[in-house]
Image 1 (cartoon, helix red, strand yellow):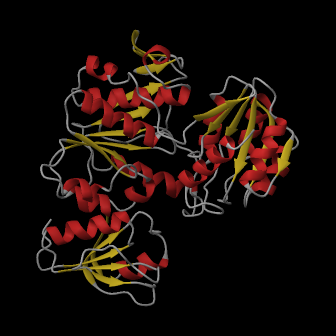
Image 2: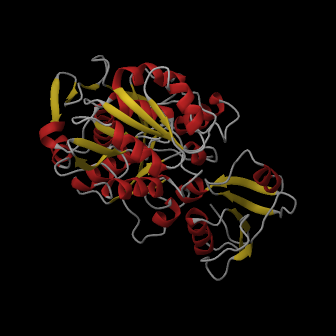
Image 3: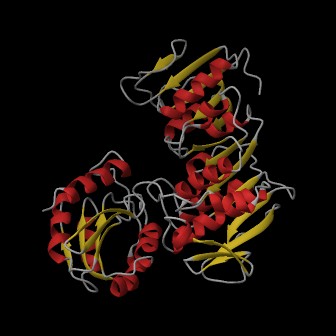
Length: 433
């Protein structure tokens, strides 16, 4: 990509926008302009021209428009600026045009971060300089400016990032699962799914796609490798304790890792299959699981109090993640759920709640609606704040049960993000006496 003599406009002044600005300056852009709706922009390189309080009413022309993943691609701001741009791309697309290594790209509604972290760990265990980046870790533009560049990228690709690719082509793609999400951003479920499917768009028959068995994905060029916790017909399958490749046992999760549950078995199989597709020896892969623990806020054990386990699953920002967390529990569950109203239908979780939960505490913007929906099948307390929900769960939880904090929606009604929400939950739990 040739940037010399060109003007670049960047929408979004967050970390991705900052990294994109640095990369464009590094490669000789004539001018770099950063636009953001916030009234103040700080932390940008000195040569960048700043445009705070940006709006669709004042677009400016450019040769290349770079859209940060936090900016709504379907919104009026992008529409106005794209009409005056020679080319519109995203931060991932910009970065890979300057990257010469190998890419494993991971997408899916849930499990992306754990799988991305695992891929990075497995590659490093085999002696490959790998970096987790994209939607998890650091922006890809930061990574490609390193000297030397890493040999491989474990790249978590969200639907927001895949919307703006053009030539992005991973050597190995991973499709973990799909469920409705982000209905506050997408006009319908099909649009959300089409954005994710773009991960396969530029792959050829020389590439690999690691796909959950049974996912309805047709018409793609790469060779498929499947994994499942439901069917032994998959190339990789697991009963939740042992991972098998065909008939061969590969990893005992109970003895060989800190991973637990069917959802983590799927993440582990996908990561192993992706790394083996790059030629990583299986012995090195299996050794890398020793001592590995999942990232924070993903069914994280906070403490055990009076015989009750308290789990922080704040990363569960949609219904599918909530269902996965519930399904993986073996003890009676007191569920804490709630947060921002995202327009999702929670009716499908009712049979699972009836089977797994002894009580529920709801909170946040969606709390009252969830409580009304859940009460016919399980005892439910409608709360306003997370602190109130924790207190309600404490009263409801019998010895030998698990209090599962798996919100099932995003956090931006009361918190700055799922990490902030999870940290608040952990603090409240540690304050219990």
